[in-house]
Image 1 (cartoon, helix red, strand yellow):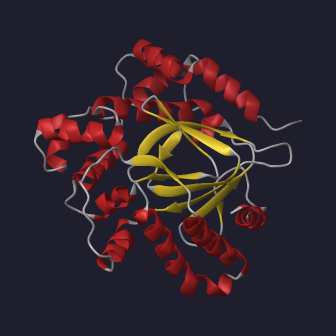
Image 2: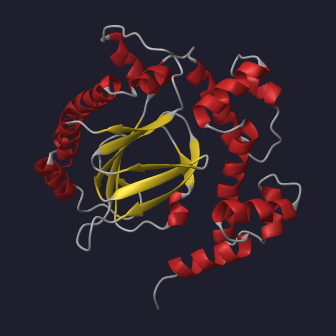
Length: 296
């Protein structure tokens, strides 16, 4: 596997310290030091592979660590914060990701024998052990960057193999759930999308339960199982992440930003912001702007 990782490091040499297009649909790469404020974001459904270095995502107060021996799969939009670590002085962090498309997963399942699994065995994200077969499929996908003429014909086949290997893994049920429109996870995804799109509005749990075609009690149970948070906690994290971006962009002071993202109390916003990010809003934004200021 080491030889494959060395080749992948060569192929991703031109990646930047922000999501970088590869020319392959759905495949992004990133390399080097990444400011923590950019790692605080809403992570969309994907399979994420670390080529070098390591990464920690914090979701609902729980840390998920992964490195080249593992991969991360997430099937719902989730607010998270993160930290990347370099592998060494001359070994920058490198990560690649494949966006998950439920329709493509569903088309793959049609050709697979049915498997016995229990719907909703856990949350909508997990760290899994890397296998040589999955790594090989990733390598062949990334090699298409040097053969762009082959991308239309071969990228769909390699994507299909990556998805197949994930489906065969211990957390394959996550992909099975995302591809089943009537699964609890897929229905919770509808409610999650609504909260993400309307984060500044008051959360009405009855409305969200209706979107998910569930009773209120069943919705609460399934939402917590998928996200490890209540709908209110989930919305709060989205509001705080959005507020941080507005503050960094100097789109208003802390009080005005608090009201913009849906808070009714500026003091409550400041308390929750400091608890989540470790600094009061104005100080946190000022430190970030200072750190990202171009050198004179």
